[in-house]
Amino acid sequence: MAEGKKLWGGRFSTPIDPLLEKLNRSIDLDKRLYKEDIQGSKMYAESLKVIGMLTDYECKQIIKGLDKVKEEWDSDKFDIKSSDEDIHTANERRLKELIGEPATKLHVGRSRNDQVITDMKLWMRSSITELSSNLRSLVKTLVTRADREIDVKMPGYTHLQRAQPVRWSHYLLSYAWTLKNDHDSITNLLDKLGASPLGSGALAGNPFPIDREALAHKLGFNSVTKNSMQAVGDRDFCAEFLFYSSMIGIHLSRLAEDLILYSTKEFGFVTISESHSTGSSLMPQKRNPDSLELIRGIGGSLTGQCCGFLTVLKGTPSTYNKDLQCDKEAVFSSYDKLMSIVQLSEGTVRTLHLNSEKCEAALSTDMLATDLAYYLVRKGVAFRDAHGLAGTNRVCNISLFFICLSGRFVGPLSVSHCRNILKVRYRSFSVNHVSHFRLSISLTANAALL
Image 1 (cartoon, rainbow, N blue to C red):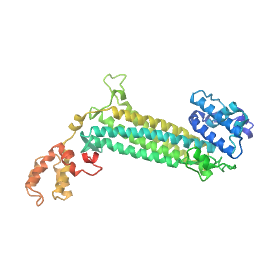
Image 2 (cartoon, rainbow, N blue to C red):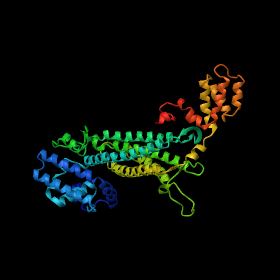
Image 3 (cartoon, rainbow, N blue to C red):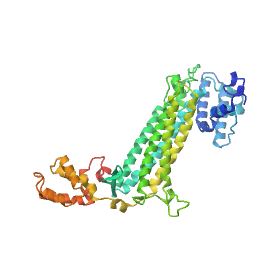
Image 4 (cartoon, rainbow, N blue to C red):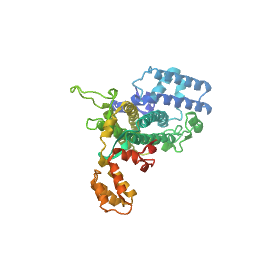
């Protein structure tokens, strides 16, 4: 396409370098914004009619033509030309082919700078809504399993070493709460997407008396941006979306890592369903948790997208720069990957089999040392003394009974108290018998989980 035919080509007399043209062309990515771009153009046309920049006939022709363009995109019949630099160029080119001269009046007072950020905000609002729905489904699956399997006990781990007995439900709910917080964080971003930048122009505003407030409300925004220079260069909402996406990816990666370990023969706590596993081309016996490994791997790439885009922003001066075109590759890629691993996580968790016998068989009396120390504290022993005593007798063996009988601890302790200590030998003591000691809302007793 000759430079004079490009939207910006009036002052150019020599062709653009082919490599630059290839890198500058973003239609393969931003064609995803076709609905938002058409929506913004239709509302902008109506605003131009209100101030007399378009006749009623011209406005109707533009809106009718844009509806036809949208139909072509919807039906996958839109013919992208090599001259289509981006989604804005493509839609305007096709509109002119359909309706002729009125299409050339649509862009008055508008820049692709305010056009693209309007499109991105509109797209992100609907995409976050869809993402939050999938996050809620995952949280619901975790809570449903936690309720159904509340009686299953298992070792709780710190430093990947057995620490204290907990309920399987307590473990599941730890991720339910984490993902619920993620859901709240990313949906709160919707508030920051509420200001419309349309009408900001390239950077110095729109010289025509467009009613920006009315235009914003027609597009579903609740306000307008206050500074045109800030508006066209703002990609903070993209950076925040990428950050929250990376955090969700990290949390799903940690869940996947846990379940990968728990599904090994060495643990045997869970079995990943065949529908979410694959095999080996060499070893017939293998059943690999590929769903979880992909969740873990893709979660890492989300962090990379976030870091990469922050680096892009750090290097730019104020207002719009072509560097900001990188936002779409980062945001669209992250969104697609995040949606896939959220949905895959839900399916994997929903279909896995819990081996409750293996979970409870992994419990051992030495994991009750903390409960033993707390028992002694309730009988009047100073915590540091109780901690030392429980540590010395961490397997809860009979020697503790003789220590108590020896009179080393007097006063609150009695022979009957020492005999009660021996009950700590039973794994049910920590999670069931001592549940009334663990009624804090954050703890593992039934009353705290229900």
